[in-house]
Length: 175
Image (tube, rainbow, N blue to C red; front, side, top):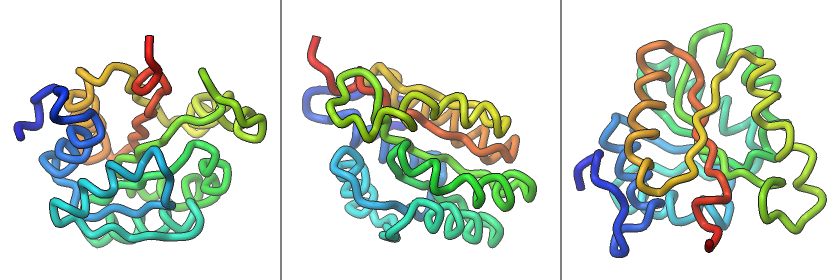
């Protein structure tokens, strides 16, 4: 599949996202398993990308930072609620040492959320990233998947800036 090919009925946005990550140079993924991220992880593994399953999001950021320091291009897959667990790793390791990589954040605590425990970090994800000087790249339209992924990986690789892709709920909500 071309990295610029839009999702179709036969190719869901999750597959397009995983393929675009690979086409842009991602070599390994670190993640805390999540139902919404599972199709992305499955596609990465299907395409031969090692999928490192960890128990905490800060471990994912630490693992990815080490992989980046060694010259590779990782991706972290996590829920936005795990961002709070990762602030020290991001602020004291990833950012100051320019160990940038794409991060795919499944947004919780936003439109359509039914779990009140997810609300605080869902509402503050973008502001938290802003406070760290990190620009977020929201993904709301499945047709823009490949473009957003390609751009985020380019930012991480070229500008050496952490590049979170926010999987907004509009990707899955029915109109």
